[in-house]
Length: 86
Image (cartoon, rainbow, N blue to C red; front, side, top):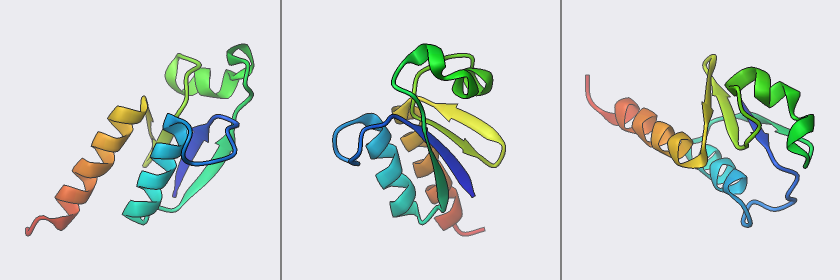
């Protein structure tokens, strides 16, 4: 199971956090959502994981991945590897 640290925006269509949530659902990856405070100074858990206060952050198989583009690329790579014949 993955953990998605995301902003407090209530929908999945207005921010990069929602884009990541949609990609996780599309890949069929179960995840827990952690809504972080609006103020970056109050995001100590995210800072401990990545050294920065920006979201989205996904923790997947023990790895913390930040930046929505990097997360989407990582998920696409995982899907390609899973789909390739061995």
